[in-house]
Image (cartoon, rainbow, N blue to C red):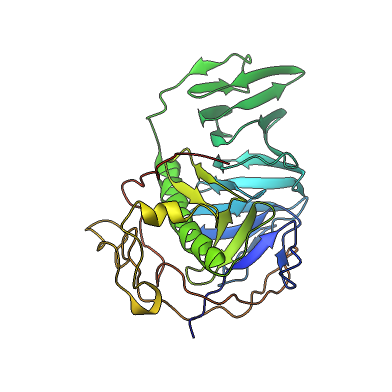
Length: 336
């Protein structure tokens, strides 16, 4: 019997799922590269067990980057020697202060019930649309690579769109910046986003094969890859980085556009082989990949309860090691 394991981390429980892992707050430390501290104590990452940045707590990276989950579909990624303080972890009112260093916020979808705000000093930057936003506490810069952001300082507010920036320690005047100019945190974030996007494909397929249709967009823990992915409620989304994100009802577009996935799962095969430099050891987009065994239960803190596994097979057997050069969109583009 094939074993999957998609564990749901969402606000809305479905009657068909008696055991759901319910996330009630933002601040889950999803991934850490290097070392970090939470309120001065070292953070130790364990598979399926995550630290949570609670209200009033401070999370600081040393030599390495970190990824923190906010509202469903919103990721905060920190550069080295950076520090954040959780002002409010409510999903309806998520507010984070960037104390030092750099942060990049990727927002795939903004639910009407969600709010994401990042503060530097006495400034408040409120996300208005899905997009990609960069913050640097050392010089007070706020940049919009894609999307829309409202930045407020001392009663003044400026709206920033794609390719616009402000320096919150100076006069609040928007200027332009070259969106194609990136840095190490941007490049690392793009790779992380790609890995999680590919886990989304496998998780969406597993949910579809098991007849599960989420009522709301949600986080989904996928043990086969050892990470949490984002699951849109319906339709297909495309991120600012260019990756596609699928719901269980739309994931067929991915396979239909890439040769299907016949003989996938435990049988392996199907689709095309992975090319050099793309996801070492992982069958490419339509490749079945050999199945896996795992799952069981999930244990964590910060508002997540135990959950049980689903049954069926994911699209691949192991997590990819690096991001592909690109991910093409299915026919039909973005839809809801």
